[in-house]
Image 1 (tube, rainbow over the protein chains, first blue to last red):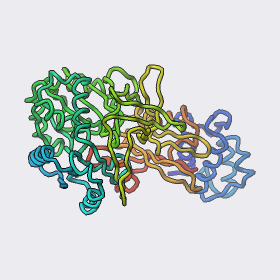
Image 2: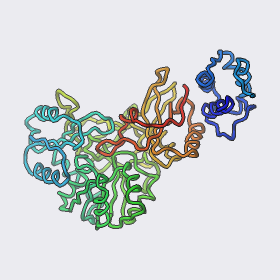
Image 3: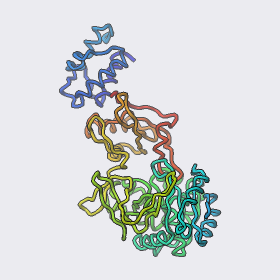
Image 4: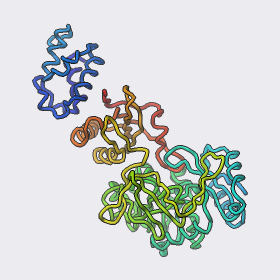
Length: 81
Length: 394
């Protein structure tokens, strides 16, 4: 499974989204389950899946799925192969 | 005083008839009960002189998994069987088909004792231990009554396909939430039957409340107290009862029995409330309501939600998360279809805050049952071969 596919599954599982709702530009304010506990859950999931620990500032500053991709790519985890 | 261990059903019937006719108090233990007979002997030996005659004790693990003996007076149980005959309109019923263990207080009073009191025929079967025998009894039945637990309904579907049993006039459910969602299917299978939901607990020996199937819309609606029984809710929402039919004492490991004086309110083990309809509604087992990150979780409510999205059985067991906060795991049987899993997750998203979501959603081909037919919640956590479909990361 590609990194993008893994991230998609993580986002779906974390916020209980339907697959049709997933977009890279999906924003936090569009997802009612992207609350403070959702942020913690996403951070734990990113660590389990990609081995990277978000800093508290990174985790609370996430505004979209694209932000997750951008941070992980900056740590050498490719999403556009 | 004697200890009777449930054996082949005909053998047990003979032994029970004899024991009921004799004066000495006796204990009747389930065939599959792991209760040590030495433990029961010590309990009987600890009874005061006045209770060594005219009484009987049944073993139960109920839904808690902890063994317990409850002591009843034969006169009270006979009175209850008579009351049930009246309010369950038993007069036209000529026979009762035994499909549950005889040592289960529900079958013991509603069927064995009722048949004895009313001189009706008791048709012995081994339930789904011998589906062929049960099927023959149901097909041959005429003006019959049967007592079931909801967990047996999938077995009807598996073994008897679309077979209908018009000879059954009364179908009783007890021992867990009433199968409200399956009511139409039960009606098709028993087209001439009046269907009742029976509510009670071991200490009530066993009956407290009753309603007809069609009277309520929710599995948690247990109806009204039967004549002579009082139900009330305590300050924490716990459902309490006083009953002229209830147990006189209870033994949970000793060294002595816990006696009931008859005036005190006894916990049923459930939470409940009196609805505006005048009927009581359950709000979960007292030990199945808890807080997680400040959010109150009632597992019965969660399971009712899941039941609306999933055609199989759902159960939950409690587990702590990595922060040692109390949570629960949802177990489905059989494995959910992809669209069912999506519907369950969507329901959680729509109806519950994240703290009330399960720690995991697992599935198993079958769910473990206690000898009395109830789901064995204590065994769920250790059930081998489960599949994990979804997990919460907090």
